[in-house]
Image (cartoon, rainbow, N blue to C red; front, side):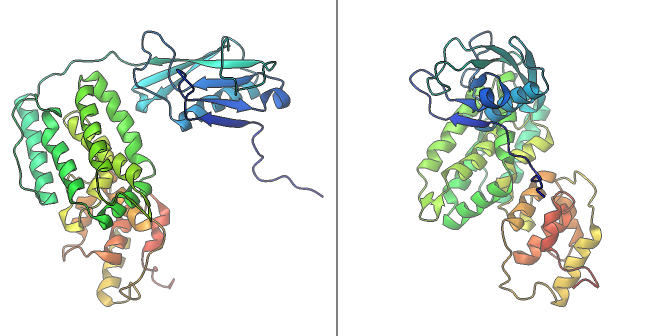
Length: 389
């Protein structure tokens, strides 16, 4: 008697070519469709085709390329894929859309398939709102931006250098926030760099996704030149940072993504909704000690209040953690810290522990208790419930 596996293997493969050939951009293509489905192979370029909106420097990620091909193959399985068919996919949290059409591949990279193999191409059209023009800040918005700058400078321990009242600086009206991000990078030592990289990994691409959404807003608001300047400044600073590449690994990508997202969020600080700003800056803010939490407002009910109280009681009684040198495995403490910064529940945590917020394992458990409903795995950081340990 034979049994099938729980998950059948895919009936095709996808190869992504990251480096373009000559004038060609990166691309991805299927392998195995003709033999297994009596169909043409399918390939897709990483950039939209020329047209009304070719996307400028816009490009699909490897994951997006896989998603586009997977959508095509799903339609093939359902008998809905023919030449001329088209469909649209939302991008940038619905701020943009990608229209994919199935066309004959008049020309293609030689590696996609043997010469006698039929090949279809996904013709991509990027649909975005038109580029906008910068609108100067009204007095109330400018004051709110300055108030946020002051809170950040105080939390990060910097002396406040007031930004200019007009938006003619290198980074626009949020220039002071961008400078703070760059100053924070300059002060990070090896341990701080590793901590920031760990927080970024625990954020599960949250910063990268927030950056894509923010750049869509930058385009429609006429601030794309400022966000590009901020991104370039972060890139230069990260590249020049001592200790960014060590024997323990190259931290350039995770640290750069976290700080680039935070800097771009500052360029657009007056335009981003609270959730997107928190997500773009979560990794950076999660490096702060618990008693210096900032830009937090309780975004949802505290949730498992009893779990917070349980951590407090166990810590005060000396029953948890089992010893001061307790090591918490994986990235769960960083995951708890990132979710706390993203969810906006910092104030709830501060108010739940009026006796002061400890660092170390107890602080990690308090973070986890406040956001355990967002990631149940964080329950592993909490003391055992009464009668269970």
